[in-house]
Image 1: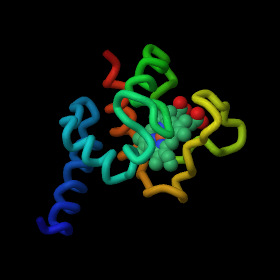
Image 2: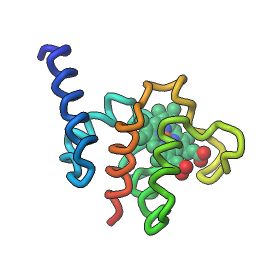
Image 3: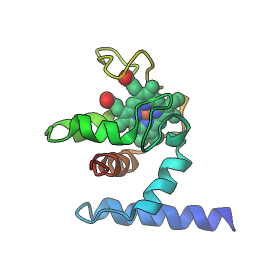
Length: 119
Ligand code: HEC
C-alpha cells in the first residue's frame, strides 16, 4: 500500500477525532496508532511486558478525575522527569525524545483508548 497516502489518511482521521472528542475513534485505528508509536513495543493490552498492561492502567486510574491529564502528560513526556513517582516498578517510560514522538492530540486519543479498556 502507498505509505504516504496511508499516513495522510491517518492524519486526517486524527484531526477529525481531535475535533470531535465526544466521538471515540474506532479501536482498530487507535490500535494502529499505538502500533505506529511503538507503544506495543513495551505494553500489551493484557499482561505485563516492559511496561504495565493497558488494562491494568485502566483499572488503576478508574474513577480518578485527574487521571486523563496526568496520563496524557506521561504518554507525551514519559515518566522519567523530576517529581514523577515510581508507581509501576523500577522501569520508567522513556521521554518522548527517546521514543516515537506523540502529539498532544494523539496522546489524548491513546489515553482515552487505554482508560476505555477497563472491564
Ligand atoms: C520503551 C518502553 C515503553 C514504550 C515504547 C512505551 N511505554 Fe508506556 N510505560 C513504560 C513503562 C516502563 C511504564 C511504567 C512507568 C513508571 O512506572 O514510571 C509505562 C507507563 C505507561 C502509562 C502509565 C503512566 C502512569 O503514570 O501511570 C501509560 C498510560 C503508558 N505507559 C502509555 C504508553 C503509550 C500510549 C505508549 C505509546 C505512545 C507507550 N506507553 C510507550 C514503557 C514504555
